[in-house]
Structures are given as C-alpha cells and as structure tokens.
Image (cartoon, rainbow, N blue to C red; front, side, top):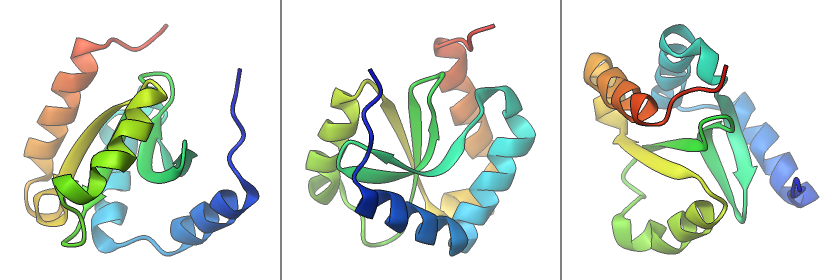
Length: 118
C-alpha cells in the first residue's frame, strides 16, 4: 500500500525541486541521459526524509551530499529509508561535478545488480 507523505514534506520537496544545487542539476542531467528507463524522480519524500533522487522501480535512492552530511548524522535517516525497502548510494558534490563518468559507472553497477523490470 502506498504511504502518503505529510503535506509539509510535499511542500518542502517542491521548493527543493525549484532550487537545486549545481551538483543536483548535474546529477539530474546524468540520470536522465544515462539511465532513462530507471525513471528517477527528484526530491522525493520517503519515510521522514526527502531524498535527492529515487527510482521506485529499482528501489534505489541517490543522494548528492555537501559538507553538512556525515555518516553519523545520516544514520537515522538512512535507516528510515532502508526500512522502506530502498538502497542508498551517496556521492559527494565534487565527485558529481568532477567525475561524472565514474559516478555513472557506480550507478550502472548497482543497477545491473538489480535489473529493471520490463
């Protein structure tokens, strides 16, 4: 059964879609060009979090992290997302901006491990 996010999360996600960071813009271009069948969505409310990118068919979340993120700070948030059945890939902003090809290879490897539905 689909779980509807709270209205405040929907409002915040819409605001975040309108004001992406440069790294998020780059990742969005990469996902749309390299992985169109995965049907990624931007700024998606999942559990008690808003994730940067999500493919519901692959149950895959991609996060583009700046300096405010750390494994300790994101542990609870990641657990909530994992509990919803999603895997999480994290990339630093500078990796997305300076090594898009390497980022694409990592995403592709994770997608190949969990094939797309027909």
